[in-house]
Length: 88
Image 1 (cartoon, one colour):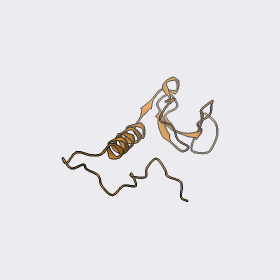
Image 2 (image 1 turned 120 degrees about the vertical axis):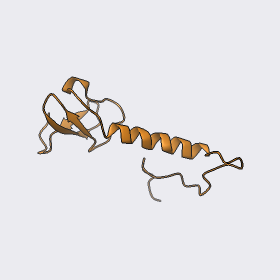
Image 3 (image 1 turned 180 degrees about the vertical axis):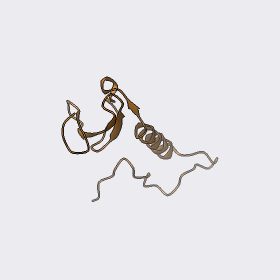
């Protein structure tokens, strides 16, 4: 059996109810995709690195360092690395 991933759309083929409104699994999926999209665009100081909506490989532009860093481990603690693989 395949494992479902966060990016996978709901398995139901019906997206709307009889009144034309999105069914709950699709509302939740869209909210999750929106959260992931917003997280992928974040930037800020080292002190303000995110502590939620994390996944291995998630990028954050660290304005203190002046380059992107990536989540290496969601922890605890969360471990960030630079593109060369060194902890930062």
